[in-house]
Image (tube, rainbow, N blue to C red; front, side, top):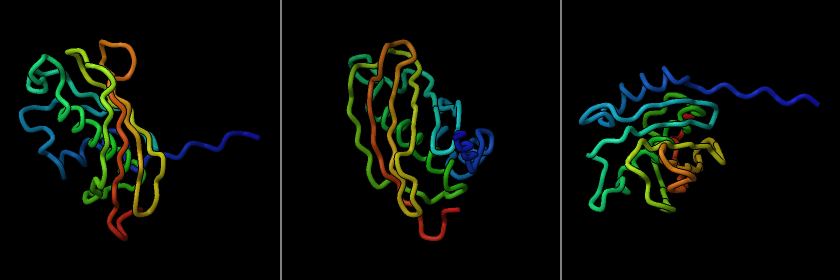
Length: 150
């Protein structure tokens, strides 16, 4: 039996970047350091460019920077399914720090585990571009406003 064709994302990479620039320009405060590398239906890959402003005492990328990238990756994955829903919001975000990331770009690979009409649940794996293996594992839930999914 042939495999079912993959669903197309509601917004492609260029549309996603334009939408985020429109509704969430704050993510670029201090300069553009986050880029969307790929978007699929319920999946995405984002990059946080290394910058000293993301480093904490001890010389590692900060937890808040890692959580910010993870939360944004989940938002992008949700939008890839729901479309232009600016008011989708995080209801839960949990992170497990696995190892100290190098002073290098941080990569977020995200996939939705459940994409419902009101809730989306996903996971993000964070990798340091310069290291081996994941540096953090994140799970999160997003709420989609009633009547907004489409």
